[in-house]
Each structure stands twice: as C-alpha cells, then as structure tokens.
Length: 281
Figure (cartoon, one colour):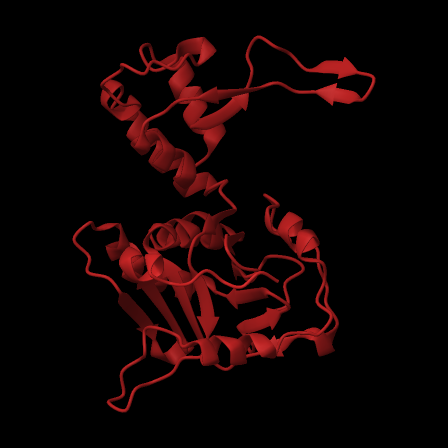
C-alpha cells in the first residue's frame, strides 16, 4: 500500500487546526519496490496517468493482473532516471532483527556470524548513562533531509574500533538501496529495531549533525549507532551486497570488509523466529 493526498477531499480548517485527508492506494509488490527505490510521489504520478492501475483518482482495482511496468515499459527508465538523479525518499525502515557488536573471530580465523549475548551486552554497556530521549531520536531519524539534529557531549559517545551489524533478510535486501539511493546522494538511512531499543544509521560524510568521522567511523550514543560511509566505500559495499536480492542466497551469510573493520551478517528467519523476545525495559 502507498499513501497519497486525497484527490477529492481537500485540506479542511477546523477549530483544532488543519485536517488533511489521506488516501490508501493498493499497489503491487514491484510498485512498492519502485516507491522505495525512488519516491512515493513519483510512482503515484505514473499510476495517475496509466489507465487500469488507478487513473487520476488512484482507484484500487483488486482484479488487475498487470503492474505499471508492464502497461508502460518506458516507466522503468523513468524510475531508473529518478533514482540516479534524485536518489530515494525512503529514510529508514523498521526491522525485526538488529544486533550490533564488535567483530569476533573463531580459533580458525573466521568471523563468528552470530553475536553472543555477552558480546552485545558488552557493546551496549559502553553507552552513555544519560542518553537523550529515544523518542527524540526516533523523530530525528525519520527526517527526509540531510541532517541529524543532535549534538551529544563528547563524554556521552562510545567509539569502537570495529563493528559487526546483524540484520534480518528483509532489512538486508534494502542495504543496496540505502547505499545507492541515500548515502551516495549525501543522505542518511536508518534501521530501527521493532522489539528493542536499538537504532543504526548509515550516514554520508555530508550529513550535518553526525557524531562520526573518517577517523572514528563507528560511534554509539545511547541506543543509537552511526556508521560513517564515504562515497567510495558506499559504491564498493553496494556492489558486494547486490547479491542480497537473490532468492537463492543461503542464510546466514556474512560480508566482511577487512580494511574498514566492518562486518554485516544477514540472518535466516528460522534462527530469528526461535529467539526469545527481549526483556521489557
């Protein structure tokens, strides 16, 4: 589903302020993907001009059998051009599985792709005793622009030499989008854990208000971890992570950029489903 301004019900002034009416538009999976990669308004504008997929009023037809890319093959190039020129408007997603910790090697020299409770607890224990309000962070992280409006005190930051990020498959499939559509356009992208108080933001060097830098690319502030990704590394990562869109990929799988001291593991659903839910705070 996508959301649009209602084309018939205009904004209405009430004693309590302005009311804007929202229309829910039913779309196909490929159309949702296009909206994620580019922008919701861009996809809605295409739907409006095509007969059979909504038209001017964006009427949902549950019986339609063709997606917009099939009805108008030229819209594929329009979407690709939009992504290349404008990037993505998607600034973050919620994820059912999100873990961060140091990179740990086994006796054989391989990265342990599953972080133990002790490792994640050790990582999280180094956070500030008085972090900023998480509600404030949540609001900041969903901004569409290229700035993060928080400037923590130096003594509230925890700087790490290496970082191991673990995500579920659905969140992992968006990593290339986050890098190509956001970071390479000077923006940020956030993964927000649904079940516990953890947030990870990928940031471009040009994003204002960040507390990471080239010398300290992995920094934690309260429940919020930022990862500093310069453009050359973003391009390298995106090319490596393109494989995550394949349905034949065997999970769990770990990607390691040794020189950058960064590892990313994409976990299988069976392991995540068998985990105990986090204790309430």
